[in-house]
Image (cartoon, rainbow, N blue to C red; front, side, top):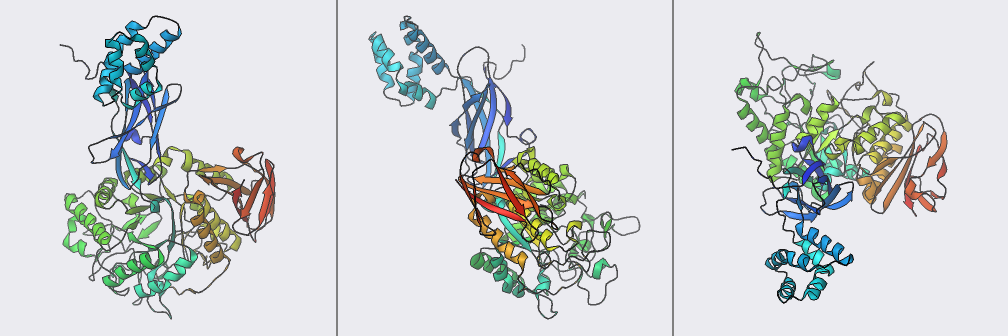
Length: 639
């Protein structure tokens, strides 16, 4: 016998289903209350009526929910649903030849042509019998009219609007075609909108003293006043003593050198332990609780899966490291950078399952302590299969947990990490300075394939990166980069107080800080206020009050002939904002901004949320002039 297809009588063919990530291998990402619009092409032989539906459910549920597909032209259809809670969802497309609606369409055409429709009416009996089984009681009236040969009454009943509506509500789905089941991951609001502030807890002390968690707690009011809602602290674990780094990344450490917090582990403990000079685990838990309860700030933990040479794992689990012929482990490198104080974990070990279990236990330990956000250090140097597994395991019971990938690497690898489960990702924004670069990058992020899964987080600086653009210390440039980060992306962050105090000294020829806080205690003026702290407060307040700034995708660059000026528009519902930013920190710039097409030919009132000024525009092109003292407009639009 021939090998016949399973659904040989299914006539509808499905194609061009979107969005899909690698043909459905990885989940599309959305936020709670953010609609997922699914599109597909439906074709079939003949002229029968095609119907379809988008089916969706929370993963693990048995029952599917349905919303009808609507034709959008050229055999394309779409439907959408809005996830109401965080977690894993599934969706699929179903399509079928709708014989009831095909029958009804033919009946109408023949009746309009004046033909005798008695046979056509009797052919429709099975469709009304099906409605009756679906508890559509008035379908019995049609069947009784046929039984009594009262064709006029049967025709009148068949032509009622309620009849076609009933057929649509209760489709028989005979010989239906089904797509594969595709994954969707839905994040809570924090994954899509957050303002990060980073500082070293050991530099929170006063008078040259090593900072503690209690010192960090005393700085929470400052972080809240600046408007940030995520406080990210570099690793808080014991720091290795073997091969400890000295000041300015010296390979020789003095007796009082504190070392790099990313060189994790010593005789005092490993990844589940707290650096004793910072305080106790109880102090850390109290900091987490106080930040959340009193200041609406989430604490982010730096998850750095690497070990100092004296980390307990090195002795207890030597098989988790790759040993060379001379009995040593090759230290970590990211050419030209060398990390002699760090041993990389060997993810290809034969004991990989126990290794994975222990690393997962580390994450779970901190989740149990109250951590809901992890900034993951260099995830691209660890197994991506591990991240996909570990993140999924945590999300089974804690879908609210956020993982930020700190990966400045090749585009494909950055995107692969996002596909594997990371909720947010570092980006190339740090190195995008000219208008064409910013426009191209924003187009990629908002309209490229990655828009369905890659959620960017813009940082103008980090402890590892002192960009060449900021090494001049020019205040206007610091303002510009802060403005762009906070208004282009709904997730952004700064490494402070280095940023607001413009601590810009660099190692010659490198994008690295001189006297880097990574290797020594620094003392800061935590009470300092200046133009940058003033702008931080304004931008973070504007972001909280304007939904358009709480998302990244609804972005449009605007026409502007001066290449030194960058203008863009963002919107969410009725809330609309328009940004104009000078990219020149030294000279005054002027030009004409072209309004978005939907805002032309109407009188607009625009309130500048930075300067407080009000403008009235009613032309397609409008004049702007910006100087380095205040090099941008943040304009809230009112029609």
